[in-house]
Image (tube, rainbow, N blue to C red; front, side, top):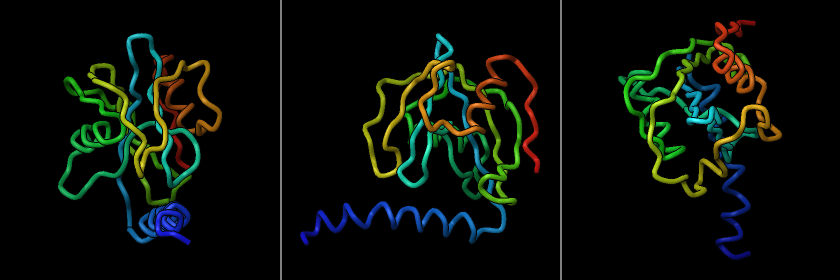
Length: 161
């Protein structure tokens, strides 16, 4: 078996194991997500290599980093999106689908620039803007809920379970 084929075979499994290790090894995690809406209210979604489904872009907050700094970093990494201004906080949620220790701050992003969509990489296998009434198959329930709340101007629905 050649080296490239071995890498192609093992890499997805190793990424998933690494992701699961970090999910359960830490005492509590803080994350950030952005409901990124363009002028036509199409929403930006990403598909990660290590977990199934379509999600709002975002990720973990590093030690010493603010939520907004983490959002700025994650949007740049995942979508080549550069924030303009300070997006408003939509809500802070317990992400019980991940663990009972995972909390996520969700922001509404309407002011941004993007020179082009990123190419697929080791973390993001697909991304793009989608009409909220025609989200791609596999969009997670939590992602759908946050999009509906934001577009309809509703107060966030708590996800404590």
